[in-house]
Image (tube, rainbow, N blue to C red; front, side, top):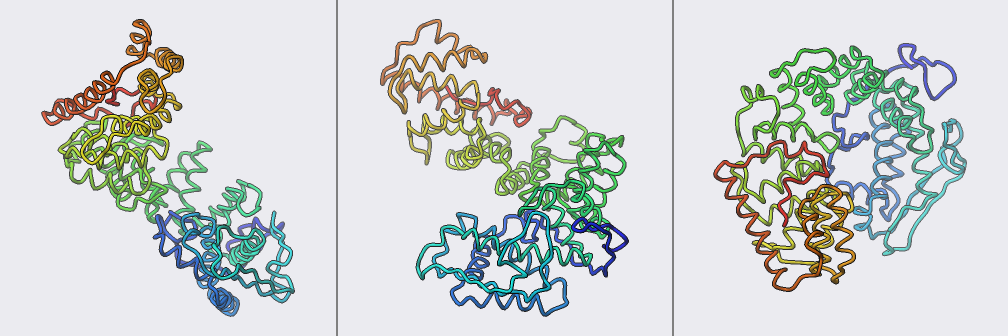
Length: 490
């Protein structure tokens, strides 16, 4: 490696000519495809790989073999890796209904090099060519393991080849393989850090962040801060968020500095991606005046509209806390949000599908009571409540007792009702304790209808109180996930 850095792929040090490739700042994928890459783009890439004429991949390969341009060779390797991921993604696979033909020419001998954990007979470096295909019109429901192995072997060959020449991004990609043990390569933290450090010294943003994390784990605060600072300056999202927290909370023996923290936080929010949507969430909470350090509000003014934009951005990037918070705001109309059952259930469902127990219980409540654009569905009320109860949410355990007692979304079962009431009571539910004291006898249609009215009225009362300014978030997202004071159900 350049600069005398030892090469983790070999047992000896190697000096080589270094040629820098552009750093990818899109950390949604280590292959530079980008966070939240458009599904159609992914499908087009997969179609190129599995196209019926079999020429596209061959042409790309030949270009990589003939050129001395490391950028083309690296993009080819990343194309292979991303194509493997696409073909393993059910969402992409479902749209592929074409002839599946992949062509693997032999490299003619000298290209094959030993690689830890990988040795694919018939792969790159073999003298034989091979093809694989499905009949025209057969659904490509999965990639053939043998073909996948050949694709992996070829991609690994190119990354290794470029890394040995000192290519920055190839070094970073190889480091992630040693870090995570991908593609048959054994986990080796030391080799991973060695490769990340090399890439960081050559201004690779994501690599610098990973070296910062490594040093923080080793309690080397000075080096951690330096690498985080470098990565943030290079545009790494996670590093900018980490630097914001450093200056907000005074980590690494730094004095809190709100102005400096907000520079990093706003940059993190602007660049937010699927790996780190946290900056958008935290800045949104500040715009809603929901942050424990009131000094922040001297620099960030109340702005519900900007908060909604940031929360929606974080939500679409998969941030479960942002999804739950938007569901809550649209349910109760806090902070000038309109009350919208449709939007509330939309965002709650996003969070519920990521196993957020409070969102699951909130969905249970919506399906129990119904609302504008939300139909009453007792079975969904029961199912979502059950998923929340299984995670230990107290209100959900009480709700399950009530559902079984009244036969809401299930057959009446007094024995099961008592079991759930006892679980809720053991977790501190006063309603469950009262229910057990009064006796569990089973309910009627009238009591079920009364419950629906009660849930609706309680929600409306909470929303009315919020519009008067009598109810604030109060650290809604900082509460323990099993505590449910903000779940307005029953």
